Amino acid sequence: MDKSAAAEEDDEFFGDQSCDDEFGAAEAEFRDVKTLSYLDGFDETKEEKLQEGFAEGYSQAFNDAFVAGSRLGSLAAKTALCELNKDTKCVTANQPRLHNAASAIHQFLRDEIMIGDEKARESTYEGAFDNLKNKLDSIESDSK
Image (tube, rainbow, N blue to C red):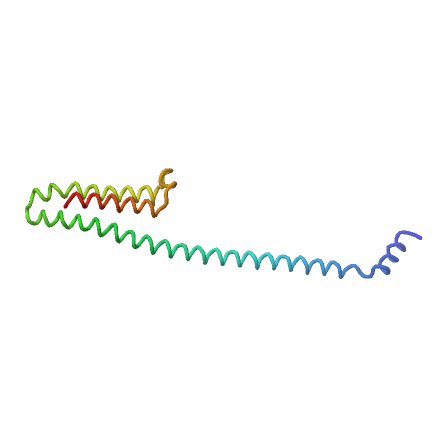
């Protein structure tokens, strides 16, 4: 029996092998679709979670900025009122407080928000903001 006859006999025994190739291609395509579906779902979930985190962080930052701005504005208003009334003693007392409050807020923004030095990274944002509020309390209590 020559080689071509043996190959032909194998084809008859195992049947047409071309359908196995089609099945393999369909299976590979199914795996690709399954992988793409997983990746699409992962990307969509990642985007949703990212948006939720942004919204939560934005809300917290807005409230914190309002608190810090109100405190700084209060000191600035006191200083301006003293200047308007030409009360030099009051102006002299409030200008350093205003400067200290602005410096404390600047330090907080630089360390916590912009740069985040190693020490700041060890603490939490909430703890750092509480420290800022305590500094502002201390500065305001000096003015009373």
